[in-house]
Picture 1 (spheres, rainbow, N blue to C red):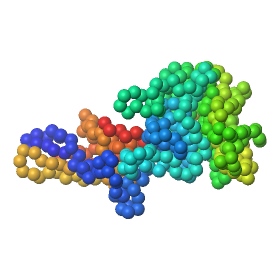
Picture 2 (cartoon, rainbow, N blue to C red; picture 1 turned 45 degrees about the horizontal axis):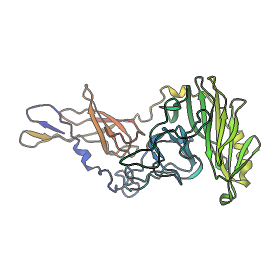
Picture 3 (cartoon, rainbow, N blue to C red; picture 1 turned 180 degrees about the horizontal axis):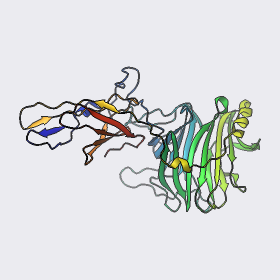
Picture 4 (cartoon, rainbow, N blue to C red; picture 1 turned 30 degrees about the horizontal axis):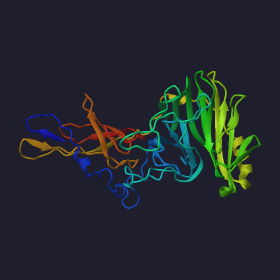
Length: 398
């Protein structure tokens, strides 16, 4: 940063951030382990807000997604569409491939699944309104016009309220009509018995609605076996099976075909207080016994309210660095406020926003979704202390 020799006013330029690559440039490997890890191969926390592109999906179909890591070892991921209130998809075996301008610098695509996709849906509302799934949003006009509607659903249909992070757990909050809903993804089981789950808590009354659960081949067929719904894909996926189970749903809830290939769970009017869980398993016919066992062993749908309250800190570490006081001649000097470039999470620090607190602390956000807060920005700059405050935001640029 620059300061006048005759004044203590800081102008706030982070000189050490100038080494970060500009948006769109092909990034180098991470400074922590040269040659071993890409700069974008970092710990983003339990979730990451971003544009998600599922296999076969148009690039802009989920522009405002949340990719949520699930499982004890974070070996599963569930993506949620905050515009349409749908579960875009879920997969096991990894997180995201991090393609796109903000990550590997490539144009023409967005991050998608790494691993095996268990289920996915197309870009339609995740809940019905008065029995309809017809997208009510208008197509964009003028510059950038496309065939994909953008923006949220009308608030009286469904509205995203935000999410809660409790330690490593993530809870989504939204409304379906007048019903307030909490939803938490999860992963249970192991090996051939891995089950991706969605747990729902309804907290207030609302009209009946149908939940979009999964989309399969239009020629798929289903049958109920062992208390589960077994969906057999079309000829192009002869041995593929998607097995679904609902646990704790209202007595009159039932599986329905929303349209050819779209599986829904029809639910009665909500009184408030309902809790249920949907389990998803994908594999081959010969492994159905493992599927039935794993789905039958799912934990009951739990109360999600405790996860909406503050939990343990994920990033308690303090990163101490030293800056450099300028010694230039003339009316101005350039002070270098060092950033925590080397940190336990491999955070890629490309600054997008910068500001000061009244008590002298300083904060910045990064293109990769972090927010950091620091103190010790004084006349000596010899003990600047940084803490990672938040992560997983969608390119916070200011």
